[in-house]
Length: 483
Image 1 (cartoon, rainbow, N blue to C red):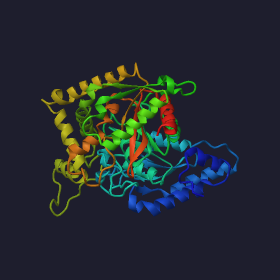
Image 2 (image 1 turned 90 degrees about the horizontal axis):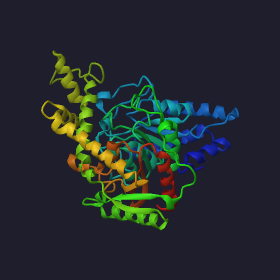
Image 3 (image 1 turned 180 degrees about the vertical axis):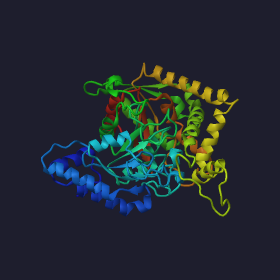
Image 4 (image 1 turned 60 degrees about the vertical axis):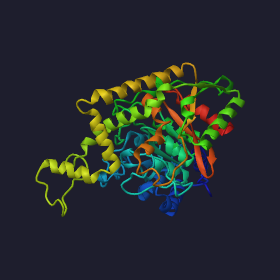
């Protein structure tokens, strides 16, 4: 049975009706990974023995006649900056190459409670810093649609695993677009939830005020099922909130004639690929044909978002990554022929970080440290935070008049491996349409909306904070009727 195209609900029905066992499904996915992942390199680590044991436990539940949940027995993948107890969690960095997680991230605890099956850990840009998954210390992940191209980043391994049908769904993290951009490049659905709606406990931090764990899946419903499972307040994460308290619930059937969508003109200016623009405009016209009210809007502060984002994110990264010094955390440099003996504590710090961190991580630490240094804090970091407030206020004012904002997810489709690796500024521009959402803390979803040859194009739907219910309804409508 070819169930690799099946959704969570379809596999659930097969399990419930005993048409297939959880062990058979898990084994099939593990075999597929072994067969196809040599070309794609989505996974860093596979949990064969553990995954089969989890699946066997699900089969016992089914055979006993117990009612099973939607996620029970569903095989999924986890980005390797999210902790899974007793397994390696490297964040694709040499400095954490042999680190074994001593506890589960809260999202993993919640999925374990539902008895979903963890297949393994996926590749990423080191410490989630990148837009192509070329900055991993261990391997370069390839786009399943075209192996000469990147899958996006930093959750490129998770997006590639879902697109290559090596997992039913995957978890990623999104700091400035790291779920949505790879979802766009790989042709899958990716959700960046409202900041605080999903616990970050057990996520290796990049930029704490921006990071958010979210799902990558084949369709909108699968994303919704996973989000509903992992959301909610966590006492171990002070930035998490009681989602049900803040949630803006959308009651009744979705009525497109009552929906008002803003299309910001700033997102269709210079730099956008013609085929991407045409695909988004075609989707917008089809929305109009379905009685959705469309209006061009302006988000003038969006042009400052990328600069503000890289000042804030690198500043937070320099603080978060200071812990990796070879003493408390990380692999300690033990000497070599060029540096045979560490006589001073400072030597251990310097050599550990020099040999443990990759070039992009070093670049961002230096940028962040500079931004926070005496004499520059007010000129750079503080000003960036003020711009962030302006961007957030701009979104909030827009959502007083509009239900959704629709933009491209990325200005272009997946680029060639190596094309932007030596030009950091060009690479950073990959996130130009996604970073404003992280700065504002809003939820956004990337939905496949067309193809440029064999390369997928993603459309981004943004809604107000804690309105994921409404966002999913709009995305499901568009998935069915528009794209």
